Amino acid sequence: KNAYAIGNEAIKLSQHSKDTFPRVYSLLHLENLYLAAGLPEITLEYLHKILAFEPYDKKIEPNTYKTGMMRWAFSIACEAYMRMGMMDSALWLAGVSSIL
Image 1 (spheres, rainbow, N blue to C red):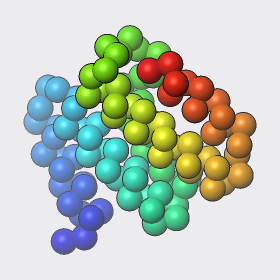
Image 2 (image 1 turned 90 degrees about the vertical axis):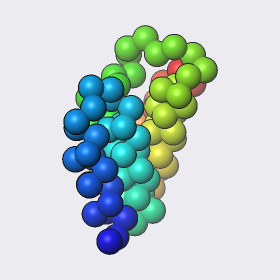
Image 3 (image 1 turned 60 degrees about the vertical axis):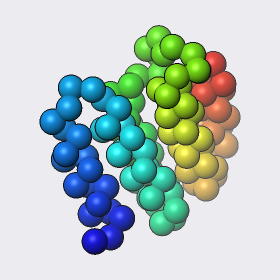
Image 4 (image 1 turned 45 degrees about the vertical axis):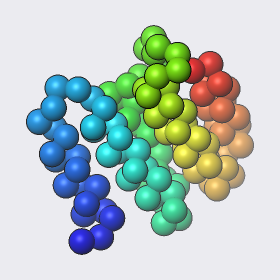
C-alpha cells in the first residue's frame, strides 16, 4: 500500500474513537504527505480538516501533545503558504502558532 492509502485507512479506523487524537494525528500525516508531494493547496485543506477537530481559538493546555500537534499542523501550513507565495498568510499563521 502507498502512504495515501494507509493514511486514509488510519482515518477510517480513528472514527471509532471518541478521542480526536487519532483523527488529528492521521490528518497531520496526510497534511505533511501532500506538502511533500508539492500540493500546497491540498495541504491547506487538511489544515482546515484538523481545525474542525481542534480549533486554534479553543483553549489548549500548554506543553501537551495537542499543543505539539497544532504547532506541527501550523508549521506545515506555513510552509504551504510560503510555497504558494502567500507570505502574509504564512506570517499570520506563524503568529497564531506562537501563542500555543
